[in-house]
Length: 261
Length: 246
Image (cartoon, rainbow over all chains, first blue to last red; front, side, top):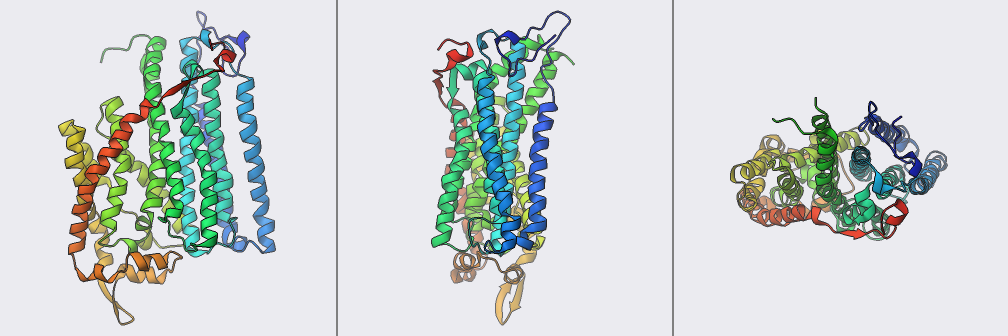
């Protein structure tokens, strides 16, 4: 049988024997990952809609502690668990014989790697949509603390969600794709680690808003730390340029000669 | 379909999706935090700063996108592709956040369009095949065309009305009706007396000045786009744990 090499040890070396073919592409992982993201972000947004103005206006009220603080604790716990277990799992189940993998397996892993990148970048897009939604919230509600219905979802929910997908993509590539195991791509490292810059940016933002800028001017220099973060997202574009030649090569090897057009 | 054809198509779709969402996320974040207030509110769409700053900061990612599409695929569609990503994120956030959550009317929050300028940028690259000519002709046109391209949407909000004995525009009155926490900055930056006294001139001057600066801005960001795939790689000292020579 054709054994998938993803997450396998040396003994599970995939071999495509005659009559058996390794399934190089399956849309299921993409559907599953995007489905998780859409479901989680949809649930957060739905909760904001029904509870935002009802119990989220004043952090000193009992209703806020009853409705919003549990969500904050839940988001923190989920972020800590996911960001620890995913890299550890991927490292412990790493492929220990990368030099011997077949082109078909390598192409399959590239496709899975790109599936992770799609989920990562889609979540980053959703995060800025929620970020602009945060702007709308601050236009009508003057902040009292750093914990608002908008921030609890954005900074403690969606941002950890995409950093988790980033870590997953990084460790997947490092432990399962030969090119990334031989040498670490600075583009990938930047794309994955840069989102953690959101932490000092949030800290600076909250500190500034607390002391000297109460009104929510979105273009204020106080917010430019987030712009640097967004520029680091662009490293993913460099990653495409770096992986493209190898993917083209693998497609040619795996699929046979391309028909004349 | 031959296997190679099928895998090519799959790779195309995956790469395009990553490109689209990466550009959408980074472009929208940059836009909203550098010139976003002009995007969000109709009363911010003034004659001095909006035509100057908005296209100037928004030529950045079309330039990066053009560099990527041109370098790797020889396709002159990058600018339009980038602007479509920005528009998706913009309208998604305006409708989901500003309208559905905080209840601002669409007349206050509609977003400007950059599509005509982006299509000109792509057309110049397609016709000349030269990034330099695209910077000079396309870069300047991207910003110059911005104000007239948006004028059909903006014109009704520029109608003059009397508000509490003062001269104002329809956009001003909508803005006064929906007080926001950014209003002090709005009053300081946009509502300056000198701006009003020059009549129609400031928009033309701002658009031309923006066009000049956009040539430089385009050049810088196109170069960044070309260099992105040249980011270095560092030898992995742990590769022996994956069955590779260290």
